[in-house]
View (cartoon, rainbow, N blue to C red):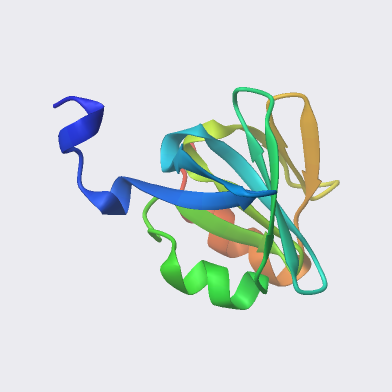
Length: 114
């Protein structure tokens, strides 16, 4: 399936200045919230800002791909490299993201642990 025929649920548009950028969910590594702003960090090195609360945003993201790990962070499960359960950190690329106490079980329940 090419990019032009993918369903609209496979991507979102994020405004950067006066331009709307189409960002595929697969490109988003993680999302960081500060107040009513969310910062989208992509695998292509981009950083996009949107004025939306994380609580609102989480409701519109596919829950099979994105998981909330902290009051200020949502990560793309497919970019998760490792989890440090002692330090409560999730590694996405070079970034070490904090994992909240209440979100740790939710995160580890989604991975196959051997």
